[in-house]
Length: 387
Ligand SMILES: Cc1ncc(COP(=O)(O)O)c(C=O)c1O
Image (cartoon, rainbow, N blue to C red):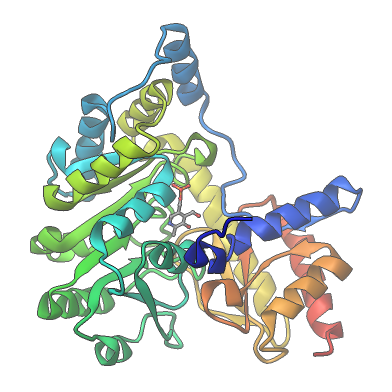
């Protein structure tokens, strides 16, 4: 048999998707599974967005669209960035693709030459590391401080002549931590000093509680020349299955991403474009009720986990995750996550998936009763676990 790519063979499939698949197959076999592993809101897409997509389908928007997104969609994105984020982008500084995941992958492919290094602070979103490796880059991990902020001093020690990019998400997946202004300013300073690109993944910007979302681009607009902003409609509009993601940045990089789009997915479906424009034009108020619900669940999750002896967490200010510190019970969170699923039928992603063993990521985008019984089971599992 002919051989396959050594590089791609070495990559790991997404651990969050793998956990979901296992949880779903246990559910299909009749087990009453509580799934804290999901990375998507439990509420549905707003009916006005669905109606728009149906109308666009009926109007015949079923052909190819322009690679990297139509002008009306990219214009709607620039308007959104201006009105909501106080950022100035032209439509030719925006590219749209099949979810932020694809856009990120194309960003790494467009930025990296073989062996160039990408700084990835822990805990990191699962796909950064493997996407960098698949793009022939070298992921360089950096430790997390006790407050969940990246260790800026450690980053400085890890910069080499091969360092090219710093990538992070704030609000952070998996911790829900939002990077402080000190952290963001520190990252900007490092990027400027060492002539690095900054990839700022802001996909959870709408899910920020009791504070306002702040981007590196708000603190230092001049970083725009070296910054790729990543965002999409998956989380903020509960549109994970629609696959709408985008990047905004200098045309030097956006044009390369667009070129890759033209050779891969080409475009998102035009009827989905119509729905995306509808969503962007509606703005954050469309989903604000759901964001309030998420905030209530966040508070409940924190209260319930704080009552578990031996468990801790860093207060999440954004996203919909609680990153539970179980290191007093075990540092092998991978084994514990299996124990929890197989014996208590609760799925939660082990910290190893995010480069941080000794933690479990709980998604609190579930109804209150599920949240309560799942955390009760987590408590029982931690009490009974023998490592
Ligand atoms: C931090 C982060 N970035 C990007 C994505 C990708 O989002 P999508 O491809 O659904 O737009 C996710 C999804 O979980 C995420 O958590």
